[in-house]
Image 1: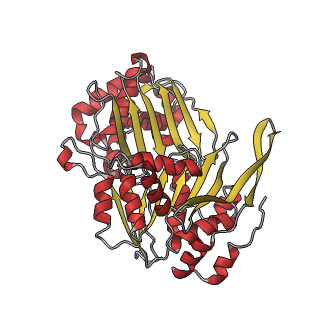
Image 2 (image 1 turned 180 degrees about the vertical axis):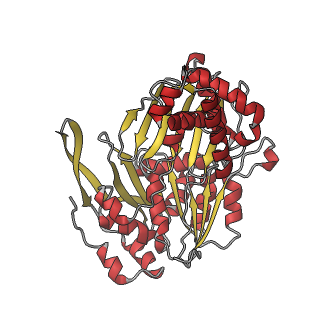
Image 3 (image 1 turned 120 degrees about the vertical axis):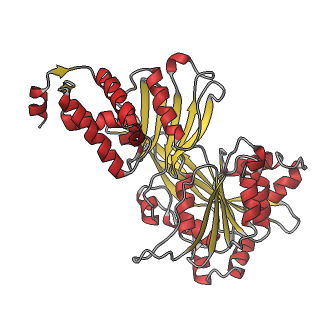
Length: 447
């Protein structure tokens, strides 16, 4: 078909010229199709594009008819060449540093440039505005920094003219939540943690201990937390809180499509009217009234940290993530965030957050792009009220080697300390079988 089409086409032109001409034709006669995204209307629009190209014998060198129609449709009604990257399952992030500099982060940790670029800074702005339109966000001179979403698993952060060089067009970070639901064996195969470490985190939370997963951006915090939450019993009620975009999908269904677990997913809502804002604090306050067994605060960035620790200290199992550089630094970061709500004495706040979150796991993306749980700690509260941070598990780097020209970091997981007698007592009181508890009193080393 492509050969026949190119041979019959009398008017071979640049893609940009044909795009402009077809856009004018479609917008003038079939504009309603561009604003709707049903499959039927997509096919209608593609058929009109096809007919126009054939009627006027329009073609682009090195593109067959189907490719040209798909590319024109994507430019006009979708998101240009970004469309084919946005919905792949092996991509975690698309970073647009400039209109002609685009890098993709793959699930295996590789960061590679793509061959496509926008045609100009203006083209980049137009496509990104189309992305933001899906969530009702507007990018202009009055709002040069915008955070929006394309779907429940795609978050977009945009820097526009006013905060970046106009010649750049836009700088964008598009975070794509991997739709694959990882199981314990996946983490073990990827050497993210030892089996015992994963069992400890999931069972400690299952039996009442609140925990915080800490680390930098893209260190695997959310993926790990999602798995931990997926291991909770189906008859326990889970209430999740996320900021703006929903990344979790923890609802379980049987083969008949019936929901078999007990989950409420919530997200914040931003409004130009402050009275209409629904913040993480508001969702936390509401969550305490819907009888949850477990509460998940997807990420603590502000004053919600104070209410999260309050929830944890009132008997709810709370999971959360935070940006910090180590397990110990996590508590000081929590104190800083809590002070945004109440300017309390730092020692008092430190005592509160260490009581609230006795278990902390530090996740890190290393130089070879591998992700590891570098450390798991327990904060033990002594009888005199003093605190001792005990390292339970640790990933020790033993060597850095070049394998096939690529850096490989070599290390092993080690159990450093057993859990404290006070944590053992709490877990036993909360129903953990003694046979499981004994497993955390032994110390195996995992390569």
